[in-house]
Image (tube, rainbow, N blue to C red):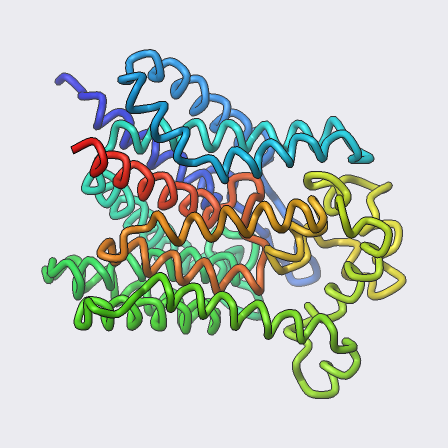
Length: 400
């Protein structure tokens, strides 16, 4: 049986998404009566192999692509290249230049692969891949139910490192099925069954934020469909702006005050206090691309995090995307990133309800977790996929 280019590329995209969701580097815990020991596959090696392989395939296929069309798409994504260029510059003042450069190279691999994907695949092809991805994630979750490693005291986590990670992955799968059934109109039994399973997995994961975001994002696009005159981009921009104002207000409030008010966001407030304190001499340029968290015993978070709270020494993020962009790239990089975000809102097609719902989900979720511009984080991968798909659509319309 002959396999077409589209089928092959769809399969590669599915593998890439599953890797981003941690399917090939599961977090497993063997629990005994007196101890729990982590047994994990080395995600670094697997991630690098998948991303390098995807990049090499994309380079090979570039030579088979219509050059003029490809260049138009690349040129239209100029804010993304500007962000990438500045991030490479930040490697110069990073204390761990080689680490920053290596981590940033993965972004080049990721973006190159997704550029290649959207050049060859239609939106229907991408929807098909997202459906297969969602089904696999659901089935893995169901299969893991009887195993002790899949459970934390705070909720069900399947093969993922934390119940919150499992929560947002389940929620994205849920968004797909909500849009598939109630927006696109595919009301068959199997879709309803998978949707019910997703709700079940979300409930037992106890990821209240992800569940609420999934429902809110779906209701938003349902309202859009029923009222096409609504300007979706303005509303998303407004929601993002309000979230920024709220977050800045929280940053300017002492963490002890937030704790007294019950607004410490499960320890995030003290993390933000620590970051603000350490950034005093690095505000303009930042520490360099991913040179602050997770860089070993000499990293700032390990050396000084204990002065605020010991658990900070074990973290690898600020639990806020925009704060971490500032940590990495300073005010200059943050402005560059905001330009990219604004351009993302401009290029997205408001009638692509699935992508709009995911975009809204990402916008809000990014204020509580570090999702953007970070390795092959699933949300970041999907964000770039949506962004480049929107650019391709605009380029195609202009060429007609």
